[in-house]
Amino acid sequence: MRRQFEEAEGELKNKILSMGSLAEEMIHSAIQGLAERKREPLQKVTTNEDEVNRLHIDIDNRCVNLIALHQPAATDLRFIIAAIKINSDLERIGDQAVNISQTAALLLDHPQLEKKLLNIPRMTELAQSMFKDSLDSFVKKDVALARTVLARDAEEDQLKSEAFNELMQLMQSDASTIQRALGLILIARNLERIADHATNIAEDVIFMTLGKDIRHHAEGVKDANS
Amino acid sequence: MNITSVVSLESLKLNLFYGNFHALKDVTVRIPEKAITSIIGPSGCGKSTLLRVFNRMNDLIPSVRITGQVVMHGHNIYSKNMDTTVLRKRVGMVFQRPNPFPLSIFENVAYGPKIHDLANKKDLPEIVENSLKKTGLWEELKDRLNNSALSLSPEQQQRLCVSRLLATEPEVLLMDEPCSALDPIATAKIEELMVELKEKYTIVIVTHNMQQAARISNFTAFMLLGELLEFDSTSAIFTNPQHQKTQDYVTGRFG
Picture (tube, rainbow over the protein chains, first blue to last red):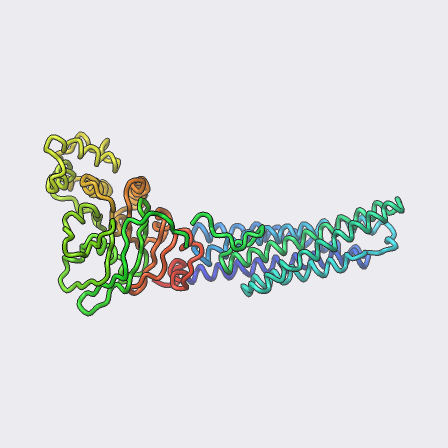
């Protein structure tokens, strides 16, 4: 029984990683289309989304089966619970990439703003690195790496606020930029959400590995049910 | 560990030897009152031996030697002046195979109160009725109390054995794999009974069935090779055990 469970667990892990790489590619393509002003990469995002949605359902089914058939406990149980939650974060990250690509497609209809993309490239880089490290920490059960992801989230929030402020000023000074500036505000918001999902994944990795729930500053609070 | 319940039974540095075999090693455990505590662990880990320590059933085995204490209400049950008959009335045991006496249903339940002089003859019908009601048997059996207990189904027999204990007004019920001879439906019914009974009684159950321990018990003790490795709330043992061996056992890596 143990062997079957471990095989199923291994397959589940691989599916999550495939879904993770697809979502990474989606972010990359969406931002590439925006930065290089090309439509081709944007179309790729939509293609990947179908596969991400398919994996979303497949992974949930696998988790339900593992729980129903093996009654997992302790680390095994925490792994599956984390997998279910990471699965929804990955799907949401995919959705954010789709949103970016749709907004980018609209922006391509207009000439580029003078200020170009402000700190959106930096936000992208940071969100991507957080996302990649959250997945690596999942694979390696690396709590220290997961904690570095949590530490980076504040910077992403800060960058988003800066982008909002700059774009607001731009809109106030020149009404013709409103449509394009709003597009960039949406994209900054999408990137910040991706970083939030990466943070959720890192928190799930810490739960999975240590059995500690650190969400909402709960670290150190004793389990109230025991 | 956050276990603040009132303690019903407590073993302190308990060691038990069967001849030269060291079956329990320095076991210190506090059994919380009016709760279900499961003892789990692989075969031969000492879980049934520990259970039997709580009402001195091991005394019946020659060559057993015990050191340490088991304290109930401030008294060491292994002290010289402890009356084991009184102890076993307070701390009753249910076994793996239902073992009703080859007597009528009525006589099975009335047996304990009679030998312990707990009741006048005229009170016995009421005691029998109450004891059978507590295990949910009364409605099924009230019209055939004089039938042989051996004519009952295994599940009814096991309930009857519990009724027989309850008739002597115990505080603690020890159950040694009480469902292992029962089918899943009967098991579910006995589990429900245990959960009802914990309102009034302290229950300690030895089980090989980890899902059963997880379903019904409030606390779980994990034993290995005669040692108590971990004791915690059942939820902690099954979601985040602290000892690697407990982790390996509850995830089915050995045992």
